View 1 (cartoon, rainbow, N blue to C red):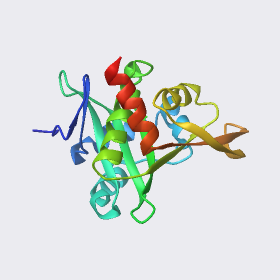
View 2: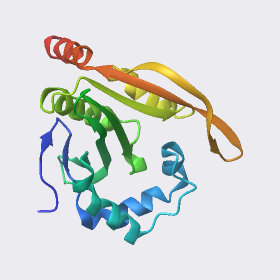
View 3: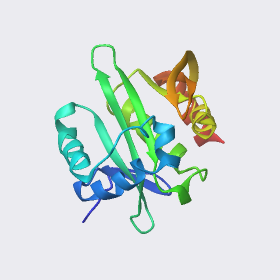
View 4: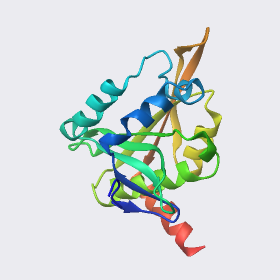
Length: 187
C-alpha cells in the first residue's frame, strides 16, 4: 500500500509522506503557478533533493502528511506541523495543494481542519500559526474559514517577479478551534 489512512476526513485523508512521491512533488514545486504561493519559485527543486528532504522528515520532529483523496488514493499535496515547541505548545502549519485541478474545491480547508484537530486534541498544542503571501487570496480565505485570525503583517518582506509582497501572519488557539468544531457539529 502506498498510503496509510492516519487521519481520515470526509473526502480526503492524511497519510505519512511516501518517498516514492518525490518526483510528483518536484513537478509541483517547479511549477510557477504552484511554487509562487509557497515562496519557492526561485529555488531549483530536484528529485534527489526532494528524496533527501522526505528522508529527513522523521528526524526533524515535525508532523508531515500527504493529502490523499479517499476515493482513488490520489495525491493532492501535503500539510505539516513544524517548528513544534513542546514547552509553549506551539507549532507552525504549512500546506499546499499541488494538483491544480483540486484548487478552490475545499480540499485544503478539510486538510487544515484535520491537522488542527490532530494538533490540538492529540498533540495537545495550544497555538498554531502560519504565514501566507498577501497575494495568495485563495489561501487567506481558506485560513479564515478554518478560524485563523491575522496577528501581524511583515511589510514587503518577500520578493517575487519584480515586486515586494507582504507576509501575513495568522494563528488559531485550541479553544477557538474547539468552539468552531463544536459549532460545526451542532449545526
